[in-house]
Image 1 (tube, rainbow, N blue to C red):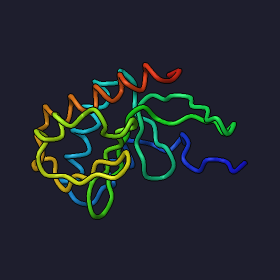
Image 2: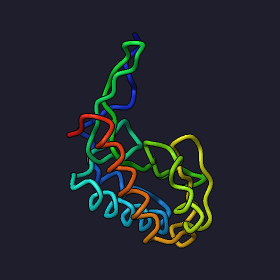
Image 3: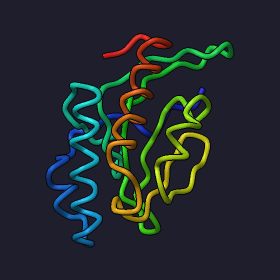
Image 4: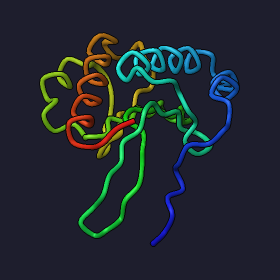
Length: 140
């Protein structure tokens, strides 16, 4: 079975965040980091070379594949900052309608600028997604 590429590293989260070239995106990421810390009660860790994650959960699929992944995380990408909402967006339709300007993938929320979304709604979304993951999986 293939080993997961995305796992915790010893890289410095502060150094990574301070190296974000775009100052608006850097400030946005610091604000998102504070939201995730509040939602999880956990300190940030680098997952791979470009993802900042908070807490972790252990999953095991029927196929036998298992591993660990962060409860909440984000990554500053060139096109947008990606916020990982691990359970996906099903059940969060009301919050999503209030959020503002964004795009989504399966568990990815793409935000160009934090000013484009309602920060209180984003905090609620992150907090609810963490609570859902804690109900489904063993967490750390």
